[in-house]
Length: 231
Image (cartoon, rainbow, N blue to C red):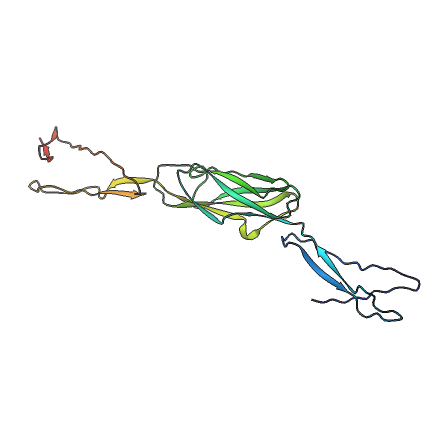
C-alpha cells in the first residue's frame, strides 16, 4: 500500500512535522511498522542523507479466550476447572465477566449455574472458572451446557469472538435395571420360563440386583430344583 501527501516549507522555515493518525483497534496483532519516505523535492532543494524513516507500532492489546472449545467430563466428576487464557499485552490488570447457560443439561439438576468475574493481574496469563456438576441417579444419556465469556469490565483487552464459549459435555455414569416385558404367560407343564432383565445406560462396571416373588396365592416356595410351587 502506498499513499502520498505534500509537505510545504515556507520561506525561512527550517523544520516541519508530518502528522499521522494511528488507529487504536482491539485486535492482538503484535508489533507492526510502516515506512515513511521523502520524494524528490520541488524548488531549490534536494534530498539529504536520510530519505526514509521506520515507524514502529507497539501493540497494547490483549485477548481473552477459553483454552478449549469443548470438554468431556463424567457426571460424578464433582467440581471441574475451565481454563481461560490471556495473550498479548500483559502490562495492566483486566477483568472479564462470565456466565453459564443451559443446553440439554439443566441448571440445578445437572450442574450449579453461576456467573462472575475473572481478574487477571499484570503479567498473569491464565485463570480458571470452577464448575460444579450434580451427580444424580437417573439414566439420561449425554448432556451438555455452555460457559461464556461476556465483556471486559476493566482494562485494555478484548474477548476473542471465536473462542468465547466452551461446551461442557457430561457423560452419564448411571444405569438402570428393568424387566424386558411387564408380563408373560407359561403353561404349568413347561420346564422353566425365561424372563429377560435389561440393564440400560452405563455398563462399564459390574452390578447386581436381588429378585423375589409375590403372588395372590396363600403361600409359595422354591423346591429343590429352584422351581416355583404355588400351594
